[in-house]
Figure 1 (spheres, one colour):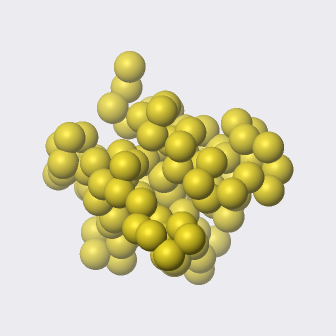
Figure 2 (cartoon, helix red, strand yellow; figure 1 turned 30 degrees about the horizontal axis):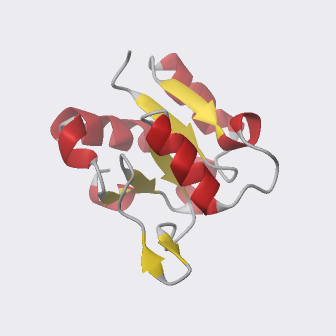
Length: 117
C-alpha cells in the first residue's frame, strides 16, 4: 500500500486532484467515496480507516461539537485561492510534508500548507 494516500474534501478542485494523480498519489475524493453532504466526522472516519491524509480548505476541520478530534492520520489545510490558482504548489507542499514527516508522526497532526510552500 502506498504511503502517499490522500483524501480531497469537496472543496478541492479537479485540477488539484489531477496533479496529485500525476505524481503517483493514491488520491480519493470525498464526493466519490462518501454520500453527498457527508459531515466532517464521516470524512475523518473514512480517512482514518483508509489511512488517508485529508486535504481541505475548511478551517477548524477537526473541531466537532466543540471537541478537537485527534484520531486522524493528518490534515493539510490549504488556502482556497491556492487550490484554485496554484495546484502544482499545493502538490509540492504536500509532497514536502510526506517526505519530511514520517507517517507515524503525521497521526493527529494538522499542517498548514502555507508553512510548506
